[in-house]
Image (cartoon, rainbow, N blue to C red; front, side, top):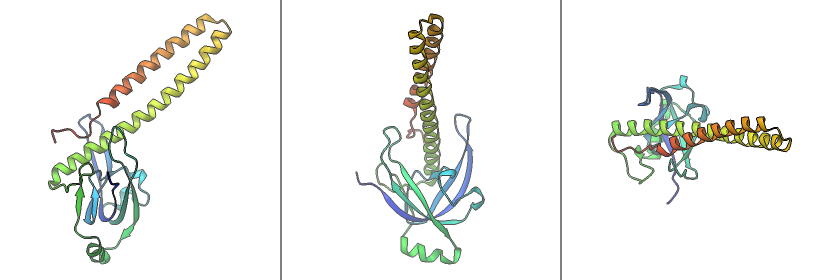
Length: 195
């Protein structure tokens, strides 16, 4: 499948919402005025330099580049801020970049219904935030597990059986947490059919 990339003139809007899971989310919604962008268009604010919450409603020249596909989350994009565009220059960019469109990155078709598009973008954003948070927690637990295994081996070598039992219990607890996180990751589905 051909990797997507492009340049678009977008209006940035800070949005906040509460997900179905009761957690609060916020991100920067990119709405194209000219050019095409992928449907994963709610961006995690710290990852987009030069665009802050205070810039809500401003226009930006935004480029995107597809990165390696994630097995669970599908196609992934890197977004770059090409700079703020003044209102007096909007027409120039609209003429150069062509009509605006939000493209479904999974099938390449233009998304027509704005309400469904926004709900889908929110769901994808929520899923990706959870996924990367759980993956980071998983890395932490694996490191902790490796450390405990090393300590257990040292205790075995020193014939300190009570400490070995202590480490085995901690190791089993961490293994159970790792299994729980793997289960949570496996049930994530950013492409529900009920939207």
